[in-house]
Amino acid sequence: QVKLVESGGGLVQAGGSLKLSCTASGYTYAMGWFRQAAGKEREFVAAISWTGGTIVYGDSVKGRFTISGGYNDYTRYLQMDSLKPEDTAVYYCAASERYFGGREGEYDYWGQGTQVTVSP
Image 1 (cartoon, rainbow, N blue to C red):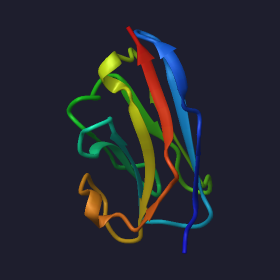
Image 2: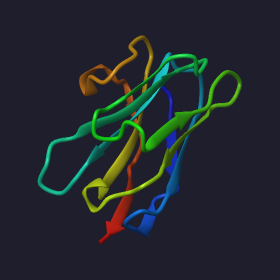
Image 3: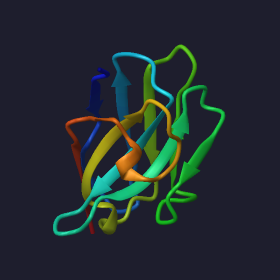
């Protein structure tokens, strides 16, 4: 059983930046970030392999968000720049024991979520 602890959410104005962190209690094959806005389905944001060598982003965040971390560092980061009001959501860290990618159902462990609010 892997536990995930997230931090870094908050309130920011449009155009600003925030950095989220997710620390795992042990090794996982890949880690990812998802988000869920009020009244909407959960959306894939980004994923990173354990070594950090393979990364993929959701279309809505490409060019603005950066996922990082790898190897012996059990913490993964999501740097969010040029934030927009539509980025407002609860952001969840997730970890998979054998899958890399954007399919929510393939992730085995989930963090508690952290709120990100972007004001106009």
